Every structure is written in structure tokens, then in C-alpha cells.
Amino acid sequence: MSHTTTNDSEDGMLSKDQEDSPIDEGSCGMGGGTVLKKGPWTSTEDAILVDYVKKHGEGNWNAVQKHSGLSRCGKSCRLRWANHLRPNLKKGSFTSEEEKLIIELHAKMGNKWARMATHLPGRTDNEIKNYWNTRIKRRQRAGLPLYPPEVSSQTFNEDLQTQTIDEFSGVAAPHCSLLQGNNYEIPDGMMDHLKSNQGVLSYAAGMPDISVGSMLTHGLGSSQYCSFTRPLIHRPKRIRESETLFPGFGGNTGLPLFDQFQGSACGKISRPELSFSYDPDPGIRGPLGFGFMPGSHANLNGTFSTSKPYSGIMKSELPSLQYPETDLGSWGMSSPQPPSLEPVDAYIRSPSPTGTVHSDCLSPRNSGLLDALVREAQTLTGTRNHSPDKSSNSGAVTPSDAVDSSMLNLYEPEWEEYGCSATSVFSECTPISGSSLDDCPPAKTLPATTVKTEPVDHISNEDGSQQEKPQISLSRPDALFDAGWFEQSSECSKEQSAVTDPIAAFLGDDCYGAYKVSGGTSMGSQGWGIGSCPWNNMPAVCQMSELP
DNA sequence: AATAGATACAACCGCAGGCCC
DNA sequence: GGGGCCTGCGGTTGTATCTAT
Image (cartoon, rainbow, N blue to C red; front, side, top):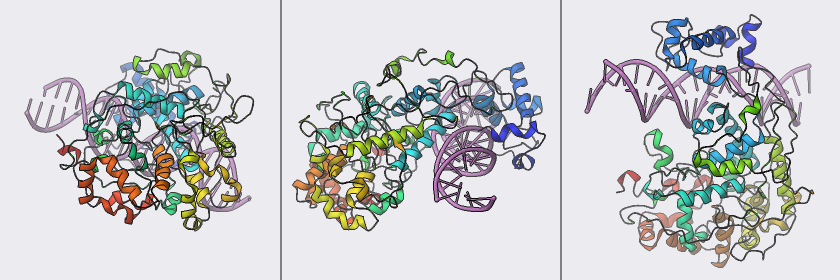
């Protein structure tokens, strides 16, 4: 926000931060004996910087302080220029197209803000990063997925087609980064493996102790809040995302890390054939996209339209000497996209599912997240009150099939300790989209005092009708949680065997044997609470660096 | 009206890669 | 090859503003 940088010198007043901002050479380290200022930039400083860049061009930022008299380190200058002063910067709220693109790009790249910014002309990595972080917070709070299903699935599909590097080797493939950064999804690599081991869908079947407390307190499924943390392994920061077998599983996910299964006893887990069929048809795609985070109950139909492009809304406040983008149209989203982003491009160019993009965006501050969330929530509410079509896809496991209500009853008392019924918790806090919880009146099971009502997207058909809840696709990682998970559980008498057997299938017999030796058998007794995941305590059988 | 919480944004920090000597 | 410098990136923090209570 420019409020901290624009008003100060214009009215001749310096903010407190500027008056006595800590001045050090800090990380810039280029003071050369001159104290370097920190904190918000003044318009005077902006002018100096702009003038300098006009004369000398970009780069050599450390020379700015030397030659222009600016008491700013080069780093700060570069940042200021890049984020606020350089021409062609596009200010204002993200348009819906940009939002979609960001979602797409994030699904592909993870937290590669700079790379993402290259596909969003006029936007800075910082903007995108802030947008995403805000979006994450919102959706986490609302228990919604990070990615709309069509984005997730599309990316997942592309990953399958483009991925050539064995992700199990720990080498990140260019497009296998679906789950990087703030990730809540199961990487395709894992999904490959899961799909090739059918039992794995029941791998979690017996997870009997999904700690509601953890769910509630940790916000469910967020990288920040979900407590499936793994032991921290010291590795270079830069390879943090690719280091793990599952990008995005580097610490906070709902499933154990694969490298914890890997070990000398297991050998390297080979990537199975992609023999499963994946139906990219959004119409029958599962309600939860691949990018659904735990805690999601969303039922998206693929329309992730949020706000209408608001070209008319420009940031009311621009940083001093800001070069406002005067021709927003010049940044048309149809600008050439890198080949690798063709799908994205197509996605962007494709007409809105409804032909128009509606928006309630009334404020420049409203980037569309709010109405997006509202729509989604409304959709969820609507779909939850509609029985799913259980017969439309034999190959898919419907939520109703998947969730054995007896399972819910099993945990009802415990869940109710937290002020909500199991069903409500499941419906609100788990990836069981819609699921059999359709039978449960949300209003009854989910007191407003228990779960804060969050605005979420409402996705409806153009005629206002709720879209039919699609079937769960096994291509979704959350199918683990909502489909086979519980399905298997009910079939296996909900005992620990329901855990161990699938795990054996998941790991393979050899690996499972090693896993048992390593203490994995205790998982049943330890419980599977999100906040007390036994994986935390699992010894690392084999680190990636030890793998051949 | 006061307060707390949420939001959006700006800026800083640490780290790593690239380049040059 | 190694060290220093510069640049860029991603994570985090700080804060003004908005909104709800």
C-alpha cells in the first residue's frame, strides 16, 4: 500500500518510521560508512532514484547510493524501482484474468513469484506474492482449496504429460511443482504411486484419530497450520522445494513424506506406470480439484471467476512519482505466452464459463477474493444440500460411497467436544467434498459459534441453479482422504488393519516390512491427528541425499 | 466511539547464483 | 579454483487502513 510512502513528504511530514527509522547497513552492507536509511521511501527519494535510473539505467544499484546521495542501499533501490518506480507498472487490483493466471502459474511453478511475474506484465513478484499469501489465508480460513479443480486437474494432467524426470529421485521436473510452496496437495509423483497401488487409497482408511482439535486450531490443511510436519532436515534453502520427493511436502502436509519410507531396505521406489485413466472432463471431475487442501469441502464446478476485470479501478494512491500504467489494455492477457504456458494461455483466452465475469468488486482493495470465496461457499452450501449423483461414474468414488457414516458416528463424540459434530467437522474441515454429509443439515451441525462463517465462492450456473456435484476423481490427492480412505475403512472394520494393509500396498511389501521395523506400526496407536502425526516422530529411514 | 481483527501493501532480510578479478 | 561483489529471489515482518463488534 502506498500510504506509507506517499503522504510523508508531500505534506512535509515524515512518518515516524522515516523520522527515526532504524538506519543501518544491515544486509545491504554497502553503506561505505554512510548510514543507510530504512523504511518507507519518500517522494524525494523516489525522485532521486528515478532521476538516477533515467541517467544511468537500471543496474549497478549500489552505485546509486554513491552517486545520487541516496541513503539507501542498492538492494533497497532495486526493490523500490522494480516494485514501484519502473515504468509500465500495472497498479491496482488484479483482474480476474490475472487471478486465474496466478492460480495457474502457481499450480505450475509453486512459489516462484519472479517467474510468475514474467507472465504478468506490469505486475511484480511482490504483488503476486502478497496476493497469493492473502488468498491462501482466506481460503485456509474458509477451508477451501487453493486451486480450483480445473486448474489443479489441468496442471496435474500436464504434469503427467510433461514430467520426464523421476520425481522420486528428488530431481524436480519443470512441471512437477504443482505442490510447491504453500501446498496442500499430493504431488503427482505420489499420486502416481498411489494410483498404481490401489490399496493405497485405503491407506488412510484406518486413520482413526484425525484430531479435530488440531484441525480447528491449525486451520486445516494449510502449510502453516497443518501440523503434518516432518523432521527438519538441514538442506540448502534453495532446493527446499525440490529436495523432497514431493514438492510441497517439505514439511507440512497431510501425508508422510516419501523419503521417510525410502531406505536401504526399500531401495529406490520406482515410478509406476501411469496406467490409470484420468478424465480431464471438468464435468465429471471430482468436486475437489487436485489442488484441494485438507480441510476443503468445496465443491467447485470449475468456474473460478471471481471479479470482473476492473480496469477502471486504479489504485487511488500511487507511490510518489509512480508511473501509472495508463494503458492497461496494452497488457492484454493475450500477449504472447511462453510455449510452456500454452495451456495457461488457452485457459486465459477461453471465455468465461458464464460468458461474463461478475463482480461485486466495489473497492480497489477488493481483489475479488472476497466474492470468489462467497460464491464458493454458497456453492458448497448448495451442493451439500443436493444429493450427489452416485451412479454417473462407476470409476469414481462418490463422497457418499466413500464416507461411511458409521465412521463419522464413531468419532462424533470426540468431535462434538469441540463444539461441532463429526459431520460438521468433516464437512467443514476435511477434503470430503460434499460427501455423505449431504444428509446433515449444515445449520444444525455447524453452529455459527463453532466455525466462523467465511465468505467463499459461490459457483452456480448462469441460470442460478446449483451445479450438479461432480464425482470425485481419483486423480485428486484428496481422494485419499475422502474416498478410499473411508471406504476402505468401513470395509476393513475400521481397524488398524485398514491402515497397515494399505500402507503395505502403498510401500510395497518390502518397504512396508522395513517401515514396520522402523516403527511405523505404531501409527495406529499413535493416532493420526493432524497435530500429532506420527510421521513427525518417524525416524528418517533414508534421506534423499543418500539415495543413489 | 472505541476496540480488535482482518486486509493489503511495502519493505526488509537472508540466501544463493552469477559474474568478475 | 577461490573470493568478493552484485543481483535476484523468496520468506517474513511491519504498518496503515478497513471492517466488524
